Image (tube, rainbow, N blue to C red):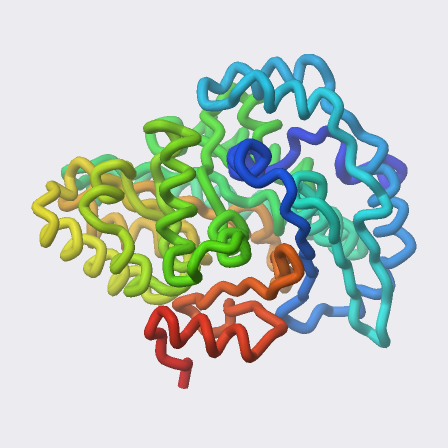
Length: 401
């Protein structure tokens, strides 16, 4: 399935769309921010990830030799929300190897990217895709692909049967959000192509910019937590960081890319900032932690209080979904709001093997800690307990039990 001599990443388009959208906004508004991103594996792998260190360093060397090709720049430039000066920046962009280090401590693999945010923020997705692919190359490839194809066929049949049967006022729409934890790049391409060909009525796009271009699909994505978290360190009053981040997003995109991420400091604290002004400016909301049903009901009640018809808005669910959980959520909400379902690991790495739960998150900006107070306690990531306590206090977020 793969050529072990070929680098994991061969194109800088092989990443999530939201990397480019956040990158452009931060380049235009805060190009001077200095940051640190850290890699963490949240579960126990089958063998220590430190065994991959030499291969990983070789892959990072290769990644830092890549540049955007003219046809790739043409594609990014064809997206109407991308501005020509950002394309000019990408034209000369190259990852700097000195900004990323990988080392072993016992059986723990450490990867740290630090430097100017506009030079290191794009490492994240590539690093996660590289670690995943190197890790799963040691599995029995033929057996994994055979099982993956069997499960893929099952999912296709499932979607074809259930989406038609469960029809609601608004259509069922799903996307691939699976770059970062995929089994391999080739496997992601096969999965996305198969869904696009066999379920075009429901499969509406991918977050992977390279696959969107190659397969003529819609590239999907707006913002991630790192964008909002950066604003915790920009000198604005901490209580106002979400409002500032949302405001600057609106100024940058002026109506495009209108899905706001709600769980940087939890849904309640988000809704307290998401007043009538933002609720009218943004097309909808993305769920990424906590109980999705409770979240959706809270969001619907919020729109109702503001006298906004939720049927004109969209909820995007993207937290650990599979086809079944997406269809169940559609069944529940499909008559009341437009919906989209971003399915990641369960599309691109469902091979009968234990998946890696790996992330690479922003931990500091301008020398200060930044944090996400997730609605799922296990997802909170910050190495500074004092700052976490302060953030909880400012936004009246109770400590998880």
